[in-house]
Structures are given as C-alpha cells and as structure tokens.
Image (cartoon, rainbow, N blue to C red):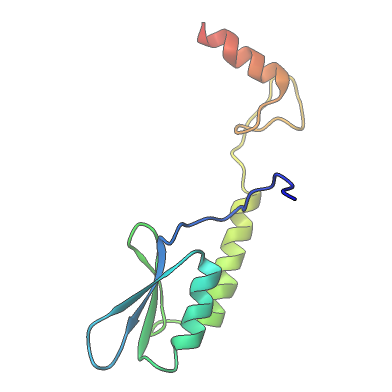
Length: 117
C-alpha cells in the first residue's frame, strides 16, 4: 500500500564513485545516492589507491587521498542537517510564526496573488 510519501533524496544515478586503480585509467560506478556512494568507497578503498565521489555537476566532492571516508561522511551529514534547518529570512507583515519565504501564510499568498494583477 502506497502511503503517498516520496523519497527526500533522489539522484537518478548522477552521483558516481570514480576509482583510480594502480594500473591506470578510471572506473566510474553510478550511485543512486550519496549514502550508496559512501558504501561503494568503503568497499573499494582497499583495492585502489584513490577513490573519488563525483556530484551531478561533475565536481569531485570527496577524494580518498585527501580525507578519510568516515570523516567526510560526518561532515556531509552535518552539512545536510544544516541545509534542512536553514531558511531564508522572511518578515511576515501579519506576524505569522508559520510564514516563511518558501512557505507563505494564507494572507501573504493572497497578497502575492493580488500584487500579480
């Protein structure tokens, strides 16, 4: 039975782990999430001299030569947690405590619609 909830984190295989073996070349392993990418790095880090996590924009966000995967995972989780609580400052003219820039109260929504016309 579907409860109507959707995953909060989807990457459609755009996060990848890039392995750099001693023999040269590279091997890219597509991952569906950063959590999966971290598991892949842990599984492969003994077999290769360097492993990297590459984000959807093609930027390397982790390199095993620079940092331990456990330390990076802690930093990633903290950054993710900070993003979930950081909200844009919005001063509601109606002093509604539940009014945010990305989730306006009913009065602010009505004002926004009225101002469009």
